[in-house]
Image 1: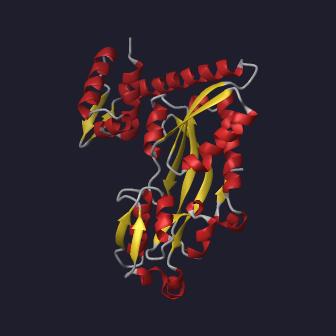
Image 2: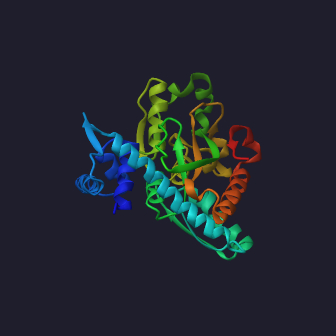
Length: 310
């Protein structure tokens, strides 16, 4: 009998192309992945993959097995969806993971609204990185992931998952008020001698600052690294540093620090579920509510800067 968890590793290998990437996705060691794949070959009595340089490519037998595994996994989710559809009301438990700002922006309002409209539907929320949320979703540990992806990062493979964009949010420049005229005249290059606050080095906001500086011909003087866009905004409020943050992270009291008409890219906020659960009644209610919350999160004065799910 073929083991479903081992077959899921083979699907990951088909998506990612290396044992190391599969190990990262599943939070296990590379040696454990290799060992499980070898056992799977023994179970299937077939050679499932071959090494091609630094990547592993599937053989024809491996690809055939992956195609069938995807059908099996989708069938399991579809079975759960079909059972849920037989209930006479929306009820049960749904596990949601969200990135840090996704908690106050979407997850908290979701819980508040559904506690009134769907009291028998229990929402469990946990904070995770977007990559971590997708991993938990694939592993079946959560039912829905709220993710964000900066447009200068490549899209992550969504094999077996389906994503719906809730909101495309622009990034904005916060700068001391006294520097706004200088920036309007000289562009971002006029901030080459200014200190910056941003996120951790490998974070989306950290990358946004470095890319903006490099595009303007200078290396930003990053003096402060904080976790969370709200914390970055609070430090920018001292008017001693510049920052790049998502528009919705900027509180009303700091709107005057936004330098207008500076193109910095943006990020896409999405809701992701497994393909077989798209028609689950519980998830249908949650997705409808998230669309409404995302639309209402956009300030009327900045609506033209955003793209919102309908």
